[in-house]
Image (tube, rainbow, N blue to C red):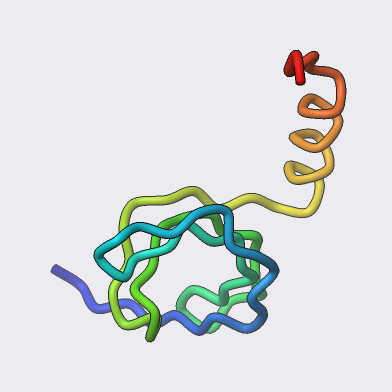
Amino acid sequence: MAEFKYQVTETLGTLSETGNGWSKEINLVSWNDRAPVYDLRTWTADHERMGKGITMTKEEVVALRNILNSIDLGE
């Protein structure tokens, strides 16, 4: 398996935390020295280990925000 590099350049927020020390976060992450992208996934507190997640461009985040704003969550 090829090695990859990553750097969490900015922590934007935590959506939830589990009892085992992992948290679901949205961050700006640079993968393999590329420009940072928005990244949603689970991480350990030290950001040494990660779960599966998704990355999004700014345009995709804006589109997601617009979709979420249009949903009636019934609260």
